[in-house]
Amino acid sequence: MSKRKAYYASKIKRATHMLFYKRHRKPGVKGWELRKALGSDYPKVLKILDDYLKGMDLQVKTVFEEEKQVEKPSLEQLDRARFCITLRGELTPKETKMIGWRIDDLAGLAIAISHIISKRGKAPRKEVEELLRDKLPGWKVGINIDRYIRYGYLTQDESEQLYLDWRTRAEVDQKALVDLLLRSENKVQ
Amino acid sequence: MQSKRERERIGREKLQRIIETCKSISDRSLNPFLVDVKENISIAREYLPEWEIPEDLCLDAETIHQIASVIKLQSEWVRHRSTSLYTDPFLLQEKLARMPKEQVVETFLKSWHPTIELEQISLHSLAEAVRYWEGLLPLKERWKEFSSAETERGLATREELVQQRILREKAFSEELDTFWLQLKERVKEKSAEGKILYWDFVGAETYEETVDRAFMTSFLITYGYATLEIHPLEEEIFIKPHEKPETKIGNKQLISIPIAVAVEDWARWKRGELK
Image 1 (cartoon, helix red, strand yellow):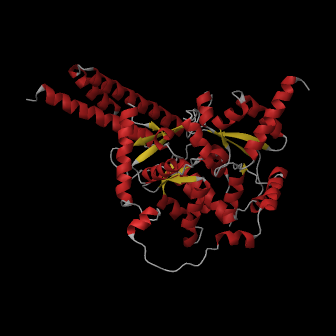
Image 2: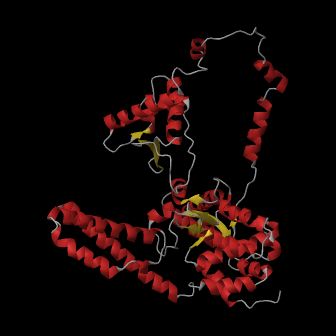
Image 3: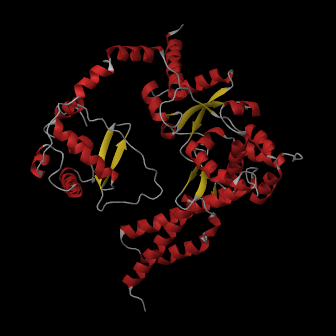
């Protein structure tokens, strides 16, 4: 193995440990932590790791502090961004049960997220609760929204407005979700 | 007829108001078309000849900058509406209301890529745990250390309790206020930026005193008398005293920051090796 290859192999190992194992309350690692551990060429290390993970249907996801995805991020933006490993492809409904999601809770999350997207990223909590109450028992609605907030999918400000949080930005392809919802033919209930 | 001074004051207020409106539009993602750009530009133009001092000219420049930001937002808003990401909320609401939840989930799963995260024990941590277990004394031996000899009950005076550090000499709030004043004075002496390095404030002659100061500092921060400024890359922590205790923190998220005050750290600080 050439010196260069060995250099990157050891960095990839270190990056794998940092990204896969839980280090903080929130999953993933900040860019500046990776820079400290892997050196200033950590974006290149992550790129190689991402290529390697393709075969396993996984990917290295970059979540920027800014709400929008950044096209050509600067080193400073990368340092502030959060990096985590996400599934590259899709889960089947059966698989979601394995990772601890009930169909009701997941449907509620989908509805909350798509409603907030359609309202340009912000919607009053009461409005979202009203939407969920249509198909979920009333006592469950508040608990579910609090759970989505706790998991990092949604966030709420002091005037009870709901926004999309870092986890939705990391895990949900918002454009695909809206497109799919609008294109879907309604099945008979 | 308005005096020049009065006119300048009104002009400044108007520009300030424009800046605040523009900022709130971009911060809260409100409809940028709520701002009447033409009107705001004409206000800025109207007052421009009045400005003479650099501060006023800076205010004017800031106003133009904020208006430009709103124009940029307006163009993004139009672009968003013309892209496929724009959805009529009512249309989407209708769609969702008619869909069975199974279909909503099926659709969601096509755009959801959940995070992978593992928690696993390693051989190294197992070995560490075994070593710890081997060194751990049985409970009955450990409890022996804590069993205290029976003593007769009696009355203790306030002075005795203070001596034994069970009670403090002053009320806690009083002590906290004194400590806060001390922080403000130290900041005034040491820096013009209104902050002081954590260890420069907490560090004291003895380790016991240092721990005591760190304990009091944690209360200063928790109760809003001061705040911490952390520079992770430089590994520097500063304490910034507030002029008045801040009880409300608005929409900022509260976080806990553990700071180790170990004997080694204190010794390094004494040698001047720790910031």
